[in-house]
Image 1 (cartoon, helix red, strand yellow):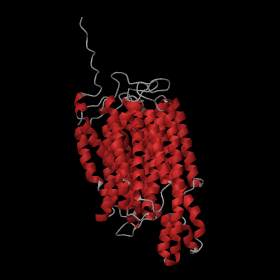
Image 2: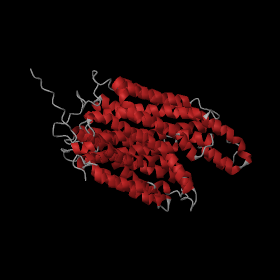
Image 3: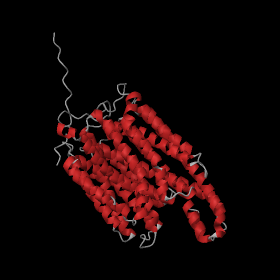
Image 4: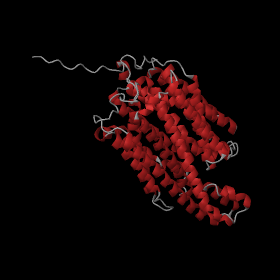
Length: 547
Protein backbone atom coordinates (compact mmCIF):
# COMPACT_ATOMS: atom_id res chain seq x y z
CA UNK A 1 0.00 0.00 0.00
CA UNK A 2 1.31 3.42 -0.84
CA UNK A 3 0.72 6.62 1.04
CA UNK A 4 0.45 10.02 -0.45
CA UNK A 5 2.58 12.70 1.16
CA UNK A 6 0.64 15.75 2.21
CA UNK A 7 0.81 18.59 -0.29
CA UNK A 8 3.12 21.39 0.81
CA UNK A 9 1.44 24.54 2.01
CA UNK A 10 1.15 27.02 -0.83
CA UNK A 11 3.40 30.01 -0.37
CA UNK A 12 1.39 33.22 -0.05
CA UNK A 13 4.42 35.42 -0.64
CA UNK A 14 6.13 35.16 -4.05
CA UNK A 15 9.45 33.32 -3.86
CA UNK A 16 11.44 36.25 -5.27
CA UNK A 17 10.11 38.51 -2.48
CA UNK A 18 10.45 35.81 0.18
CA UNK A 19 14.18 35.36 -0.53
CA UNK A 20 14.98 39.00 0.19
CA UNK A 21 12.54 39.48 3.08
CA UNK A 22 15.23 40.10 5.72
CA UNK A 23 16.96 42.68 3.53
CA UNK A 24 13.58 44.38 3.07
CA UNK A 25 13.10 44.39 6.85
CA UNK A 26 16.53 45.98 7.36
CA UNK A 27 15.66 48.78 4.94
CA UNK A 28 12.26 49.32 6.55
CA UNK A 29 13.89 49.58 9.98
CA UNK A 30 15.98 52.50 8.66
CA UNK A 31 12.78 54.38 7.86
CA UNK A 32 11.35 53.46 11.24
CA UNK A 33 14.47 54.50 13.14
CA UNK A 34 14.75 57.91 11.50
CA UNK A 35 11.08 58.78 12.16
CA UNK A 36 10.88 57.52 15.76
CA UNK A 37 14.36 58.73 16.72
CA UNK A 38 13.47 62.26 15.62
CA UNK A 39 10.59 62.32 18.10
CA UNK A 40 12.97 61.95 21.04
CA UNK A 41 16.11 63.63 19.70
CA UNK A 42 14.48 67.08 19.64
CA UNK A 43 13.95 67.11 23.42
CA UNK A 44 17.70 67.41 23.97
CA UNK A 45 17.99 70.39 21.62
CA UNK A 46 15.23 72.48 23.23
CA UNK A 47 17.50 74.47 25.53
CA UNK A 48 19.89 75.27 22.67
CA UNK A 49 17.07 76.34 20.30
CA UNK A 50 15.77 78.67 23.02
CA UNK A 51 19.17 80.43 23.20
CA UNK A 52 19.52 83.75 21.34
CA UNK A 53 20.99 83.75 17.83
CA UNK A 54 23.49 82.70 16.60
CA UNK A 55 23.57 79.84 19.14
CA UNK A 56 19.84 79.14 18.72
CA UNK A 57 16.66 80.78 17.44
CA UNK A 58 15.65 82.60 20.61
CA UNK A 59 12.42 80.57 20.76
CA UNK A 60 9.99 81.17 23.61
CA UNK A 61 8.65 78.35 25.75
CA UNK A 62 5.37 78.39 23.80
CA UNK A 63 7.23 78.25 20.48
CA UNK A 64 9.36 75.35 21.70
CA UNK A 65 6.25 73.44 22.72
CA UNK A 66 4.69 73.98 19.31
CA UNK A 67 7.87 72.85 17.57
CA UNK A 68 7.11 69.49 19.19
CA UNK A 69 3.34 69.67 18.99
CA UNK A 70 3.10 70.70 15.32
CA UNK A 71 4.73 67.38 14.41
CA UNK A 72 2.52 65.40 16.79
CA UNK A 73 -0.68 67.09 15.65
CA UNK A 74 -0.14 66.44 11.93
CA UNK A 75 1.36 62.99 12.47
CA UNK A 76 -1.43 61.67 14.68
CA UNK A 77 -4.21 63.42 12.77
CA UNK A 78 -3.24 61.91 9.40
CA UNK A 79 -1.99 58.45 10.47
CA UNK A 80 -5.24 56.67 9.74
CA UNK A 81 -5.85 58.43 6.42
CA UNK A 82 -2.26 57.76 5.31
CA UNK A 83 -2.66 54.05 6.07
CA UNK A 84 -5.91 53.98 4.09
CA UNK A 85 -4.27 55.68 1.09
CA UNK A 86 -1.38 53.23 1.23
CA UNK A 87 -3.79 50.28 1.09
CA UNK A 88 -5.56 51.88 -1.86
CA UNK A 89 -2.72 53.24 -4.03
CA UNK A 90 0.26 51.14 -2.93
CA UNK A 91 2.24 50.96 0.31
CA UNK A 92 5.62 51.33 -1.37
CA UNK A 93 4.45 54.57 -2.99
CA UNK A 94 3.13 55.83 0.37
CA UNK A 95 6.44 54.90 2.04
CA UNK A 96 8.56 56.67 -0.58
CA UNK A 97 6.36 59.79 -0.54
CA UNK A 98 6.54 59.86 3.26
CA UNK A 99 10.32 59.46 3.33
CA UNK A 100 10.86 62.24 0.78
CA UNK A 101 8.55 64.60 2.72
CA UNK A 102 10.26 63.70 5.98
CA UNK A 103 13.73 64.22 4.53
CA UNK A 104 12.80 67.55 2.92
CA UNK A 105 11.19 68.72 6.17
CA UNK A 106 14.32 67.72 8.11
CA UNK A 107 16.55 69.69 5.73
CA UNK A 108 14.32 72.77 5.96
CA UNK A 109 14.22 72.52 9.77
CA UNK A 110 18.01 72.53 9.92
CA UNK A 111 18.04 75.74 7.86
CA UNK A 112 15.20 77.53 9.71
CA UNK A 113 15.91 81.15 10.64
CA UNK A 114 12.92 81.78 12.90
CA UNK A 115 10.84 79.75 15.38
CA UNK A 116 7.83 80.14 13.05
CA UNK A 117 9.71 78.49 10.19
CA UNK A 118 10.81 75.67 12.47
CA UNK A 119 7.21 75.01 13.55
CA UNK A 120 5.98 74.95 9.93
CA UNK A 121 8.74 72.60 8.77
CA UNK A 122 8.14 70.32 11.76
CA UNK A 123 4.53 70.01 10.57
CA UNK A 124 5.86 68.94 7.16
CA UNK A 125 7.95 66.27 8.88
CA UNK A 126 4.82 65.08 10.67
CA UNK A 127 3.05 64.69 7.32
CA UNK A 128 5.90 62.54 6.03
CA UNK A 129 6.01 60.45 9.20
CA UNK A 130 2.26 59.78 8.97
CA UNK A 131 2.80 58.03 5.61
CA UNK A 132 5.92 56.15 6.70
CA UNK A 133 4.73 54.44 9.89
CA UNK A 134 1.64 52.50 8.70
CA UNK A 135 3.27 51.60 5.38
CA UNK A 136 6.31 50.13 7.16
CA UNK A 137 4.35 47.63 9.25
CA UNK A 138 1.95 46.81 6.38
CA UNK A 139 4.87 45.92 4.08
CA UNK A 140 6.38 43.71 6.79
CA UNK A 141 3.09 41.81 7.02
CA UNK A 142 3.09 41.33 3.24
CA UNK A 143 6.66 40.07 2.77
CA UNK A 144 6.71 37.57 5.63
CA UNK A 145 4.71 34.37 5.92
CA UNK A 146 2.40 34.04 8.92
CA UNK A 147 4.79 31.82 10.87
CA UNK A 148 7.64 34.37 10.57
CA UNK A 149 5.60 37.49 11.29
CA UNK A 150 5.98 37.31 15.11
CA UNK A 151 9.78 37.30 14.80
CA UNK A 152 9.78 40.16 12.27
CA UNK A 153 7.39 42.24 14.37
CA UNK A 154 9.48 41.52 17.47
CA UNK A 155 12.49 43.04 15.71
CA UNK A 156 10.31 45.95 14.55
CA UNK A 157 9.07 46.64 18.09
CA UNK A 158 12.58 46.42 19.51
CA UNK A 159 13.74 48.98 16.97
CA UNK A 160 10.98 51.39 18.05
CA UNK A 161 12.08 51.16 21.68
CA UNK A 162 15.74 51.51 20.77
CA UNK A 163 15.07 54.63 18.67
CA UNK A 164 13.16 56.28 21.51
CA UNK A 165 15.93 55.53 23.99
CA UNK A 166 18.95 56.47 21.86
CA UNK A 167 17.43 59.71 20.56
CA UNK A 168 18.67 61.78 23.52
CA UNK A 169 22.12 60.16 23.25
CA UNK A 170 22.49 60.98 19.56
CA UNK A 171 21.15 64.49 20.18
CA UNK A 172 23.61 65.08 23.00
CA UNK A 173 26.57 63.95 20.89
CA UNK A 174 25.54 66.14 17.94
CA UNK A 175 25.00 69.24 20.08
CA UNK A 176 28.38 68.74 21.74
CA UNK A 177 30.11 69.11 18.35
CA UNK A 178 27.74 70.92 15.96
CA UNK A 179 25.01 73.58 15.83
CA UNK A 180 21.38 72.97 16.82
CA UNK A 181 20.26 72.22 13.24
CA UNK A 182 22.44 69.10 13.17
CA UNK A 183 19.73 67.17 15.06
CA UNK A 184 17.58 67.55 11.94
CA UNK A 185 20.26 67.45 9.26
CA UNK A 186 21.41 64.02 10.45
CA UNK A 187 18.16 62.59 9.05
CA UNK A 188 18.88 63.64 5.46
CA UNK A 189 21.68 61.19 4.45
CA UNK A 190 19.82 58.33 6.17
CA UNK A 191 16.65 59.19 4.24
CA UNK A 192 18.53 59.39 0.91
CA UNK A 193 20.19 56.00 1.39
CA UNK A 194 16.95 54.42 2.60
CA UNK A 195 14.96 55.74 -0.38
CA UNK A 196 17.51 54.35 -2.85
CA UNK A 197 17.42 50.96 -1.13
CA UNK A 198 13.60 50.99 -1.01
CA UNK A 199 13.30 51.65 -4.75
CA UNK A 200 15.58 48.68 -5.38
CA UNK A 201 14.43 46.18 -2.74
CA UNK A 202 10.96 46.85 -1.36
CA UNK A 203 7.99 45.30 -3.23
CA UNK A 204 4.70 47.11 -3.59
CA UNK A 205 1.34 45.82 -2.36
CA UNK A 206 -2.17 47.17 -2.15
CA UNK A 207 -5.76 46.22 -1.47
CA UNK A 208 -6.96 44.65 -4.77
CA UNK A 209 -10.58 45.61 -4.08
CA UNK A 210 -10.55 48.89 -2.16
CA UNK A 211 -14.01 50.05 -3.25
CA UNK A 212 -14.95 53.68 -3.63
CA UNK A 213 -13.22 56.28 -1.47
CA UNK A 214 -15.40 57.73 1.29
CA UNK A 215 -14.43 61.44 1.50
CA UNK A 216 -16.89 62.12 4.34
CA UNK A 217 -15.34 59.40 6.48
CA UNK A 218 -11.80 60.57 5.68
CA UNK A 219 -12.64 64.18 6.59
CA UNK A 220 -14.38 63.22 9.85
CA UNK A 221 -11.43 61.02 10.91
CA UNK A 222 -8.89 63.78 10.22
CA UNK A 223 -10.86 66.55 11.94
CA UNK A 224 -11.76 64.34 14.90
CA UNK A 225 -8.21 63.14 15.53
CA UNK A 226 -6.68 66.61 15.06
CA UNK A 227 -9.19 68.20 17.47
CA UNK A 228 -8.70 65.41 20.04
CA UNK A 229 -4.89 65.61 19.95
CA UNK A 230 -5.00 69.42 20.04
CA UNK A 231 -7.14 69.34 23.19
CA UNK A 232 -4.79 66.83 24.81
CA UNK A 233 -1.77 69.00 23.96
CA UNK A 234 -3.42 72.14 25.37
CA UNK A 235 -4.40 70.33 28.57
CA UNK A 236 -0.82 69.16 29.01
CA UNK A 237 0.61 72.61 28.41
CA UNK A 238 -1.77 74.26 30.88
CA UNK A 239 -1.69 71.37 33.37
CA UNK A 240 -5.45 71.99 33.43
CA UNK A 241 -8.04 70.18 31.31
CA UNK A 242 -10.89 72.49 32.38
CA UNK A 243 -9.79 75.54 30.34
CA UNK A 244 -11.98 76.43 27.36
CA UNK A 245 -9.24 75.99 24.76
CA UNK A 246 -8.67 72.48 26.14
CA UNK A 247 -12.10 70.95 26.75
CA UNK A 248 -13.79 72.50 23.69
CA UNK A 249 -11.48 70.80 21.13
CA UNK A 250 -11.45 67.64 23.27
CA UNK A 251 -15.24 67.48 23.27
CA UNK A 252 -15.40 68.49 19.61
CA UNK A 253 -12.92 65.77 18.68
CA UNK A 254 -14.88 63.11 20.56
CA UNK A 255 -18.14 64.23 18.91
CA UNK A 256 -16.55 64.15 15.44
CA UNK A 257 -15.07 60.71 16.06
CA UNK A 258 -18.47 59.55 17.30
CA UNK A 259 -20.02 60.85 14.06
CA UNK A 260 -17.26 59.06 12.17
CA UNK A 261 -18.14 55.73 13.80
CA UNK A 262 -21.88 56.29 13.18
CA UNK A 263 -21.24 57.23 9.54
CA UNK A 264 -18.91 54.28 8.97
CA UNK A 265 -21.54 51.81 10.18
CA UNK A 266 -23.88 53.08 7.47
CA UNK A 267 -21.44 53.78 4.62
CA UNK A 268 -21.49 51.45 1.61
CA UNK A 269 -17.68 51.62 1.35
CA UNK A 270 -16.38 52.51 4.84
CA UNK A 271 -12.78 53.60 5.34
CA UNK A 272 -12.73 51.75 8.68
CA UNK A 273 -14.53 48.47 9.28
CA UNK A 274 -16.10 49.06 12.69
CA UNK A 275 -16.70 45.30 12.97
CA UNK A 276 -12.97 44.92 13.61
CA UNK A 277 -13.51 46.35 17.08
CA UNK A 278 -16.15 43.72 17.88
CA UNK A 279 -13.27 41.26 17.83
CA UNK A 280 -12.18 41.48 21.48
CA UNK A 281 -8.64 40.34 20.61
CA UNK A 282 -8.23 43.25 18.19
CA UNK A 283 -9.74 45.82 20.56
CA UNK A 284 -7.82 44.64 23.61
CA UNK A 285 -4.55 44.69 21.65
CA UNK A 286 -4.91 48.29 20.48
CA UNK A 287 -5.84 49.33 24.04
CA UNK A 288 -2.77 47.49 25.41
CA UNK A 289 -0.51 49.29 22.92
CA UNK A 290 -2.03 52.67 23.82
CA UNK A 291 -1.56 52.08 27.55
CA UNK A 292 2.01 50.85 27.04
CA UNK A 293 3.01 54.06 25.26
CA UNK A 294 1.10 56.08 27.84
CA UNK A 295 3.47 54.59 30.39
CA UNK A 296 6.60 54.93 28.23
CA UNK A 297 6.10 58.63 27.48
CA UNK A 298 5.22 59.27 31.12
CA UNK A 299 8.42 57.73 32.49
CA UNK A 300 10.51 59.49 29.84
CA UNK A 301 8.86 62.77 30.78
CA UNK A 302 9.54 62.77 34.53
CA UNK A 303 12.66 60.59 34.30
CA UNK A 304 14.54 63.26 32.35
CA UNK A 305 13.74 65.92 34.98
CA UNK A 306 14.80 63.56 37.77
CA UNK A 307 18.15 62.81 36.16
CA UNK A 308 19.00 66.37 35.11
CA UNK A 309 17.34 68.69 37.64
CA UNK A 310 17.65 66.50 40.75
CA UNK A 311 20.72 64.38 40.11
CA UNK A 312 22.65 66.93 38.01
CA UNK A 313 23.40 64.79 34.94
CA UNK A 314 23.92 66.38 31.54
CA UNK A 315 21.46 65.73 28.68
CA UNK A 316 23.90 63.26 27.13
CA UNK A 317 24.42 61.44 30.44
CA UNK A 318 20.65 61.33 31.00
CA UNK A 319 20.20 59.78 27.57
CA UNK A 320 22.84 57.17 28.32
CA UNK A 321 21.10 56.32 31.59
CA UNK A 322 17.94 55.42 29.64
CA UNK A 323 19.79 52.92 27.44
CA UNK A 324 18.95 49.92 29.68
CA UNK A 325 15.33 50.40 28.60
CA UNK A 326 16.41 50.00 24.98
CA UNK A 327 18.60 47.02 25.88
CA UNK A 328 15.66 45.30 27.57
CA UNK A 329 13.53 45.77 24.48
CA UNK A 330 16.26 44.72 22.05
CA UNK A 331 16.97 41.53 23.99
CA UNK A 332 13.38 40.47 24.60
CA UNK A 333 11.28 41.81 21.69
CA UNK A 334 12.59 39.36 19.06
CA UNK A 335 12.17 36.50 21.56
CA UNK A 336 8.72 37.38 22.84
CA UNK A 337 7.25 34.95 20.32
CA UNK A 338 8.74 32.05 22.33
CA UNK A 339 6.84 33.19 25.42
CA UNK A 340 3.67 33.45 23.32
CA UNK A 341 4.16 29.92 21.97
CA UNK A 342 4.59 28.51 25.47
CA UNK A 343 2.23 30.64 27.55
CA UNK A 344 -0.06 32.43 25.08
CA UNK A 345 -0.65 36.08 24.24
CA UNK A 346 -2.82 36.66 27.31
CA UNK A 347 -0.22 35.53 29.85
CA UNK A 348 2.68 37.19 28.02
CA UNK A 349 1.04 40.62 27.68
CA UNK A 350 -0.37 40.49 31.21
CA UNK A 351 3.10 39.74 32.58
CA UNK A 352 4.53 42.60 30.51
CA UNK A 353 2.00 45.12 31.82
CA UNK A 354 2.65 43.95 35.40
CA UNK A 355 6.39 44.43 34.89
CA UNK A 356 5.70 47.97 33.68
CA UNK A 357 3.58 48.56 36.80
CA UNK A 358 6.38 47.09 38.95
CA UNK A 359 8.87 49.53 37.39
CA UNK A 360 6.60 52.46 38.27
CA UNK A 361 6.37 51.11 41.80
CA UNK A 362 10.16 51.20 41.89
CA UNK A 363 10.17 54.84 40.78
CA UNK A 364 8.13 55.62 43.89
CA UNK A 365 11.09 54.42 45.97
CA UNK A 366 13.69 56.62 44.31
CA UNK A 367 15.14 59.44 46.39
CA UNK A 368 17.56 62.29 45.85
CA UNK A 369 20.54 60.16 46.84
CA UNK A 370 19.43 56.68 45.71
CA UNK A 371 22.14 54.70 43.91
CA UNK A 372 21.81 55.32 40.18
CA UNK A 373 22.02 51.57 39.56
CA UNK A 374 18.46 51.32 40.91
CA UNK A 375 17.25 53.58 38.11
CA UNK A 376 19.14 51.43 35.59
CA UNK A 377 17.45 48.27 36.85
CA UNK A 378 14.02 49.92 36.73
CA UNK A 379 14.62 51.13 33.15
CA UNK A 380 15.63 47.60 32.13
CA UNK A 381 12.52 46.11 33.75
CA UNK A 382 10.35 48.67 31.96
CA UNK A 383 11.99 47.78 28.64
CA UNK A 384 11.42 44.05 29.20
CA UNK A 385 7.79 44.72 30.11
CA UNK A 386 7.23 46.72 26.92
CA UNK A 387 8.93 44.00 24.87
CA UNK A 388 6.48 41.43 26.24
CA UNK A 389 3.49 43.60 25.27
CA UNK A 390 4.24 45.28 21.94
CA UNK A 391 5.14 42.36 19.60
CA UNK A 392 2.35 39.97 20.71
CA UNK A 393 -0.25 42.75 20.71
CA UNK A 394 0.86 43.95 17.26
CA UNK A 395 0.81 40.41 15.84
CA UNK A 396 -2.67 39.90 17.29
CA UNK A 397 -3.93 43.10 15.64
CA UNK A 398 -2.47 42.29 12.25
CA UNK A 399 -3.45 38.61 12.37
CA UNK A 400 -7.05 39.60 13.05
CA UNK A 401 -7.25 41.26 9.62
CA UNK A 402 -6.89 40.07 6.03
CA UNK A 403 -3.60 41.08 4.42
CA UNK A 404 -5.18 43.55 2.02
CA UNK A 405 -6.16 45.68 5.05
CA UNK A 406 -2.65 45.65 6.56
CA UNK A 407 -2.14 49.39 6.04
CA UNK A 408 -5.40 50.33 7.74
CA UNK A 409 -4.72 47.90 10.61
CA UNK A 410 -1.22 49.30 11.05
CA UNK A 411 -2.64 52.83 11.01
CA UNK A 412 -5.16 51.96 13.75
CA UNK A 413 -2.34 50.46 15.87
CA UNK A 414 -0.09 53.49 15.34
CA UNK A 415 -2.93 55.92 16.02
CA UNK A 416 -3.67 54.32 19.39
CA UNK A 417 0.06 54.34 20.15
CA UNK A 418 0.36 58.04 19.31
CA UNK A 419 -2.79 59.02 21.20
CA UNK A 420 -1.63 56.94 24.17
CA UNK A 421 1.78 58.61 24.15
CA UNK A 422 0.23 62.08 23.87
CA UNK A 423 -2.11 61.33 26.75
CA UNK A 424 0.82 60.06 28.79
CA UNK A 425 2.74 63.31 28.35
CA UNK A 426 -0.34 65.51 28.86
CA UNK A 427 -2.02 63.74 31.78
CA UNK A 428 1.07 62.61 33.67
CA UNK A 429 2.66 65.99 32.95
CA UNK A 430 -0.40 67.71 34.42
CA UNK A 431 -0.26 65.45 37.50
CA UNK A 432 3.45 66.21 37.93
CA UNK A 433 2.99 69.96 37.47
CA UNK A 434 -0.04 70.24 39.75
CA UNK A 435 1.54 68.18 42.52
CA UNK A 436 4.79 70.14 42.26
CA UNK A 437 2.97 73.47 42.37
CA UNK A 438 1.06 72.43 45.48
CA UNK A 439 4.30 71.40 47.17
CA UNK A 440 6.32 74.54 46.43
CA UNK A 441 3.64 77.26 46.51
CA UNK A 442 3.90 78.09 50.22
CA UNK A 443 7.72 78.52 49.94
CA UNK A 444 7.62 81.26 47.27
CA UNK A 445 6.55 84.16 49.50
CA UNK A 446 10.10 85.54 49.78
CA UNK A 447 10.32 86.06 46.02
CA UNK A 448 9.21 89.24 44.21
CA UNK A 449 5.55 88.91 43.16
CA UNK A 450 6.42 88.92 39.44
CA UNK A 451 8.67 85.85 39.85
CA UNK A 452 6.35 83.66 41.92
CA UNK A 453 4.28 82.35 39.00
CA UNK A 454 7.24 81.25 36.82
CA UNK A 455 9.00 79.82 39.88
CA UNK A 456 5.98 77.67 40.71
CA UNK A 457 5.51 76.18 37.22
CA UNK A 458 8.17 73.47 37.38
CA UNK A 459 11.42 72.42 39.00
CA UNK A 460 13.26 74.04 36.08
CA UNK A 461 11.28 77.24 36.61
CA UNK A 462 12.18 77.37 40.30
CA UNK A 463 15.87 76.68 39.70
CA UNK A 464 15.92 79.26 36.90
CA UNK A 465 14.50 81.93 39.23
CA UNK A 466 16.98 80.97 41.95
CA UNK A 467 19.81 81.44 39.48
CA UNK A 468 18.43 84.83 38.44
CA UNK A 469 17.81 86.15 41.97
CA UNK A 470 21.04 84.83 43.45
CA UNK A 471 21.93 83.97 47.08
CA UNK A 472 18.70 85.49 48.48
CA UNK A 473 16.71 82.65 46.88
CA UNK A 474 19.20 79.82 47.49
CA UNK A 475 17.02 78.48 50.29
CA UNK A 476 14.46 77.40 47.67
CA UNK A 477 16.67 74.74 46.09
CA UNK A 478 16.14 71.96 48.64
CA UNK A 479 12.37 72.56 49.05
CA UNK A 480 12.03 72.58 45.25
CA UNK A 481 13.81 69.24 44.92
CA UNK A 482 11.74 67.74 47.74
CA UNK A 483 8.54 68.99 46.11
CA UNK A 484 9.58 67.47 42.80
CA UNK A 485 10.38 64.10 44.37
CA UNK A 486 6.92 64.00 45.96
CA UNK A 487 5.35 65.00 42.64
CA UNK A 488 7.32 62.30 40.81
CA UNK A 489 6.15 59.66 43.28
CA UNK A 490 2.52 60.72 42.81
CA UNK A 491 2.97 60.63 39.03
CA UNK A 492 4.65 57.22 39.13
CA UNK A 493 1.78 55.87 41.23
CA UNK A 494 -0.74 57.21 38.70
CA UNK A 495 1.15 55.62 35.82
CA UNK A 496 1.40 52.35 37.73
CA UNK A 497 -2.38 52.30 38.15
CA UNK A 498 -2.78 52.73 34.38
CA UNK A 499 -0.37 49.82 33.79
CA UNK A 500 -2.38 47.62 36.18
CA UNK A 501 -5.55 48.50 34.25
CA UNK A 502 -3.70 47.41 31.11
CA UNK A 503 -2.83 44.10 32.77
CA UNK A 504 -6.50 43.57 33.64
CA UNK A 505 -7.53 44.29 30.03
CA UNK A 506 -4.90 41.87 28.73
CA UNK A 507 -5.90 39.12 31.18
CA UNK A 508 -9.61 39.49 30.43
CA UNK A 509 -9.69 39.91 26.65
CA UNK A 510 -6.51 38.76 24.90
CA UNK A 511 -6.31 35.23 23.46
CA UNK A 512 -4.65 32.37 25.30
CA UNK A 513 -2.22 29.81 23.91
CA UNK A 514 -2.21 29.00 20.20
CA UNK A 515 -4.40 25.97 19.71
CA UNK A 516 -6.42 26.68 22.85
CA UNK A 517 -10.08 27.60 22.50
CA UNK A 518 -10.41 31.16 21.32
CA UNK A 519 -6.72 31.56 20.57
CA UNK A 520 -5.84 32.65 17.11
CA UNK A 521 -2.83 34.96 16.97
CA UNK A 522 -0.46 34.17 14.21
CA UNK A 523 -2.63 31.32 12.99
CA UNK A 524 -4.63 33.33 10.54
CA UNK A 525 -7.41 35.86 10.54
CA UNK A 526 -9.77 35.77 13.46
CA UNK A 527 -13.13 34.15 13.01
CA UNK A 528 -16.41 34.41 14.77
CA UNK A 529 -18.99 37.11 15.27
CA UNK A 530 -17.65 40.54 14.48
CA UNK A 531 -14.28 39.29 13.29
CA UNK A 532 -12.82 40.56 10.05
CA UNK A 533 -13.38 38.17 7.16
CA UNK A 534 -10.45 36.15 5.93
CA UNK A 535 -9.09 37.06 2.55
CA UNK A 536 -10.39 34.84 -0.20
CA UNK A 537 -7.81 32.90 -2.22
CA UNK A 538 -6.46 35.14 -4.90
CA UNK A 539 -7.96 38.24 -3.32
CA UNK A 540 -5.22 39.06 -0.85
CA UNK A 541 -2.66 41.76 -1.41
CA UNK A 542 0.22 39.83 -2.94
CA UNK A 543 3.45 41.84 -3.23
CA UNK A 544 4.27 42.99 -6.72
CA UNK A 545 7.70 42.88 -8.27
CA UNK A 546 10.09 45.37 -6.72
CA UNK A 547 11.45 48.31 -8.59
